[in-house]
Length: 318
Image 1 (tube, rainbow, N blue to C red):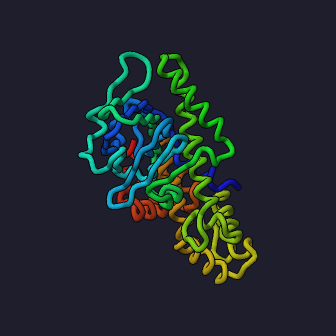
Image 2: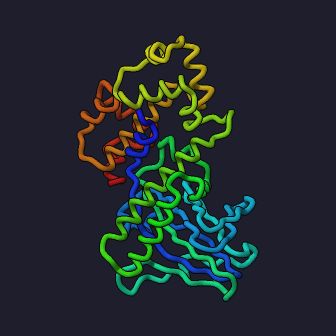
Image 3: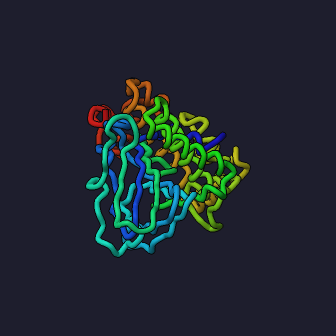
């Protein structure tokens, strides 16, 4: 089973809200966009993942209280947690808020930014990927605050670069369908960045991505995800993985940072919350889908995880 695809499918990603930016040195901006600011474009999303693709030039970029990175043409940086970050040719300059220099299009086309003091030119394409529910999703809870993707180091480097440039020029010209191209591209870029992060994970790490590298833990995760409603026990999972109950539990806990049944309960609650948010399925049917014998037992587990009853949570989050 493709675990990453399963987790991202439940996240329900949606790409959009793009802008073209041109900066001339010296410049510095502070960037963070609240989800509600993108609602007219993406719809109501609970979480945003901003990214910046450097078309030409270079810039420094930094999270608060962290050393800056230098980005050059052909590189992409993503912020899975949507943390506030500084960008600029000189991060010592007083930062300008992105909302204060954002220029909407006069008709069809990209929002734009032109800012700076006439020096060296840096051009960016910026986008925002929406996610309906990040809380409880093991991918979003495990990713670092910043991911860099060097397009030239991916197998699809030329395709990514040419598609970005083509879609950006099409939107600038106001041609229909181009925003859809960029939206789908942003989803593919995020998946590629996550895959790259998982492949390059250093040895000795713990968490969900580390679990993908461990054959026993990956087998147990695949069992859970392929049959979320299964009446699993630690003994059953250990037997399927070819280990004793205690050996499997110890290995899973060491790699994942939590016991196997704790992970299963978390994933069940995340799937349930996504279903409550996006469907009209009855609570009794939903309880059955995520492995609970009764609606009452499901409601108790959901209240413990989210702090409110399923019906109340649905009403608020719809």
